[in-house]
Image (cartoon, rainbow, N blue to C red):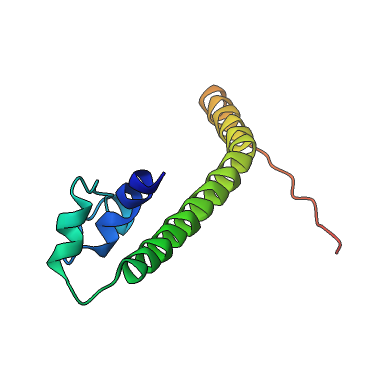
Amino acid sequence: WYQRRVAITAGMVSENPVKEHRGIPKAIFLEDVDGYMAKDTQRTAADVLKEFDEQLQKYKYMELNLIQRKKRLKAQVPDIEKTLEIVRHMLNKKEKSTDCDSALIPLLL
């Protein structure tokens, strides 16, 4: 569990994080935790874990936003398909005849 957590958040903690899609840093796996901790002797393990926890929360927030966006876009698919079907129908009618009558129905709000 600890190694997985370090792997998820290590990309955000490094000085030059590797950027991926939409500015989300790529997670880097830390093979040598002792070596990583030895680089900066002023930080304690609790400080590093706090940073990792903060980064993990940021990843979870980004994930939640992406999941919500995906649901919203999936909900729009039926409407887009209906609109596409109407456009295709109108194009077929236009090809068959040059006259295209449309009736506008006023909406009362």
